[in-house]
Image (tube, rainbow, N blue to C red; front, side):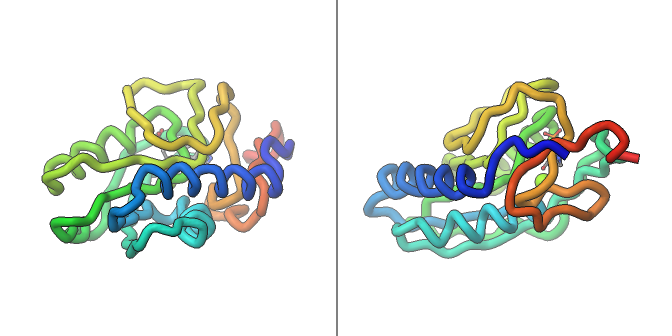
Length: 173
Ligand code: IMP
Ligand code: MG
């Protein structure tokens, strides 16, 4: 595999995102909604750097990937209720085609009577086919590579790598 974003660069960027969020949501209360399983590690790092009072909840979304190709999207469980004074911020690992996020957006819009912020670690723009508006982006990559690490998996593994890497030929069989 080829490392695209080092552990140091990830941690520095998480700090910068938290600083933006602290500024934008100053004086508010946050409901941070993590999309599992991919965002688990990003969520854990990010919330520990946010200084605005918050609670976090999680929902599980599976996009059934046949190896590295996108497939159907499944949502599990229910979206949590938000208190009237809570601002909602969704935390996701990666946007690829945008299919998952545009479905999630519809689900969020149907459920919440307010705008919902969206924070993603990686915006992988190589094969986007759904328009998705992102409020906070860790890294934008023009690549089509399949990425692993920092929560991203290949066939369930490699989520625990502390960096973000591209799989190379021969590694995806
Ligand atoms: P999308 O629906 O094509 O935008 O893909 C969204 C979901 O697919 C993400 O939430 C990830 O779970 C997964 N995914 C997309 N690209 C990658 C990748 O490069 N590595 C690992 N998982 C990915
Ligand atoms: Mg995901």
